[in-house]
Amino acid sequence: MKLVDTSSWIDYLRGLETTPSQRVAHLVVNEEAGWCDMIAVELWNGVRGVKEKKDLAALEAEITLFPVDAGVWAKARQLSRVARDKGITAPATDIIIAACAAHYGLEIEHCDAHFHSLIPCSSSL
Image 1 (tube, rainbow, N blue to C red):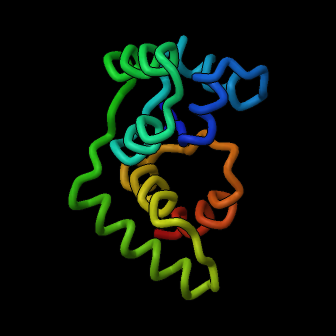
Image 2: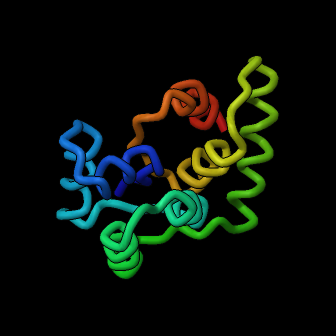
């Protein structure tokens, strides 16, 4: 199971022929794709057109949701402190997603440069 970041879901939902889109398609077919509420909110915030809305609604019924609970928020605060101590500034949304992955012991499927700086920090939590 992998937590699929918004960046990779966008390629998949838009039917782009990219490596991240192909990786997501593989995860979906094998029922190994997961997301959290933050990712779903980001996707709904950027969804375009009727087809994307239908596709996203259908995914909500089949993709594993990892709740952003008190444990994830605690990880996010810790990850923020560790990142800042290392001079890393990242969007709060990416910190929450990285914290969710760390909390549940998941890898992140992404094509977002922010995670390259966060993932080493999250693995040290």
